[in-house]
Image 1: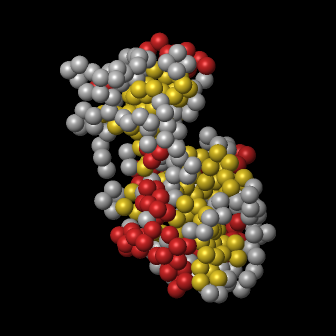
Image 2 (image 1 turned 45 degrees about the vertical axis):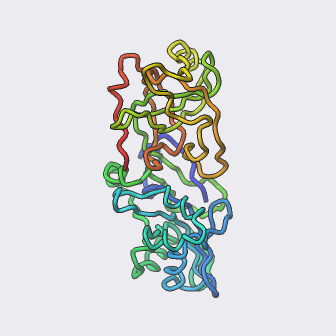
Image 3 (image 1 turned 135 degrees about the vertical axis):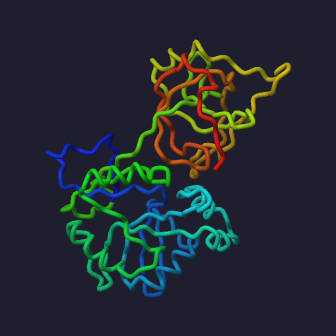
Length: 328
């Protein structure tokens, strides 16, 4: 079952009584406890079992046969004090080193739904409140690496979660009808992502200087080097007209300065998207223009993982007013 993105929760009068859960920044996973082992399946149908031997081992030992869970795989990085989507991605390319990664950064399955009971009963036609009660009973004595997702009907409590946990990797909230059935493929839940307004420096564009399509954003680190932090959604015609007059191409070689610090094309791994990422050709521009953007809370190290929303040019701001990039 999927969630429909919405900007805000419905008003209490029309949407009161919704069950609210934190939205973790992880891999959505269906976990099957089979008679002969465990199968972890991604939202796209990919078999993730071999990449998460730690989770498979926990489920094989603790989860009763026939149970089927829906949840989110997350990895906690103690040195950063937050979840790490990058560590999840590393599992998929680690090869023989995946067990060493699992030992260093163990994964947790945060379960939020029970689709089938150990008795083999299909709970998907049942209301969420019944599925949740059965899930709570099932996970009562489980280890910390198999945990129950928090849930509340109190909007103030949910707001406190977001305020306290955004820095730790919670992206927002998921709102669910307590009487709703579980319908695979249907967007029957609501997803409200935390949005953060901030500033960044334009370091490049796609398209042309007269008609920029997207902007590539950077922030300076403590050494004065411009580091890539993200890319915008496609610009509207009005935004293109606003930006074009303030952009200038960065020279290939500077006199008495440094060359543009980003490679050409931009490496696929810099895009923040793990699947279908390709190197990106772009036009380097002089990093002198500050823009205001709207982002969500998903980070891969110091980069915004999802495209940001361009809001406006900040001609009143210097690049020295933009927050410095701090490596985590």
